[in-house]
Image (cartoon, rainbow, N blue to C red):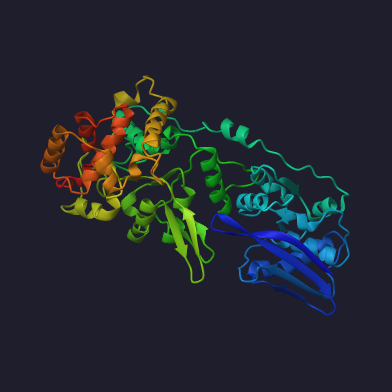
Length: 513
């Protein structure tokens, strides 16, 4: 007898439907075809143990499991549940009153028949709704994640017996419902870190406000303990709130990577990822035998924070250059290519030298001559070229630390950022793929960032006197445009240019002595 149901395979952040067919007939042995990997092949033992636990049996006949289409590689253990149900139906051990073919069924079985959570549930649910399936049967631990998708019956099951009872109609399972919009808007503004807890560092807060307003990348240079990490962690709290579309897109990536955890649902806050400097190339940009999203994709629509930037391997930093420009990363293999989105803000921090005290107002640098320049040279020019703001962070004085003065809340700063972003949205409404000032290509910079003769004279003088490199020109104009947006000014004024010029520390020829 033939039994059939449907599962799914996830490639990149999208799901492909897989047909699971089982026949039981004359002969011996268990066969699985359709390009399964080792984890899928091992399902025979898990399924057999689960069936025995609930007093069913694996047929002592020829059992053929086909996973179609056969030219797509199947991986993971999530096919256990559909295979088990099809084996039971094909061997006449259960008589289903609901059709297996009306549902997407996924889940990993333990040896006692309980269901373990799986990866990539959200893109599978999205595809199931798109293709018109009646429902999605899956482990209860993943149900909240799948229930984000409306107009799809999400049936959470704890054990194989629950799934059998559902199809035989001996057990009633109520589909899980989640009010996506209510969930989204209730958690939209929940942040653990707030700028009101930061005393002093007003100039750094201002720089981060500009960065958030224009989507600019930032590098902070300063001695240990100056507050670089503390400030970076608070940046997501002043970024504009995620839209529902961005939230779903971000949640899909985390779902595919298995980062949501059990009982997790919609991601409503902008991600903040801070990988350690020992990270590998593939872990940062994504990859592996079966490609998974890397840290830059997990930071999509959020912030990627690289602490102690010169300590990262040179190769790791260089592979970020293309994703920083294209806002996506493509991982190619012999037979196929997978694309992961990677639209993130890069925030980096570093000490000015190995000892950390070069240019310190009180402590003396003990590094030998030439060490500072060699330390800075660990970061390539092309990477620095993609960072718009270079900010020098100085230690906070005792008077500032002990002050009882209330600092400005993230909520107030965020309102100014949102207003500036609305101006940019209107400006780039006819430009596909451009949403903020940082995304402008060079030809557009000349058009959007026009400056008057006095501004040109100031910029020329600054580039000559401070020894600014040619690559700083476009960056200064982009940042100046953002500063003007924050001031609600249609034109870039002298004061906007002057402020933008000071954020190019590492471009000064004499900065490292």
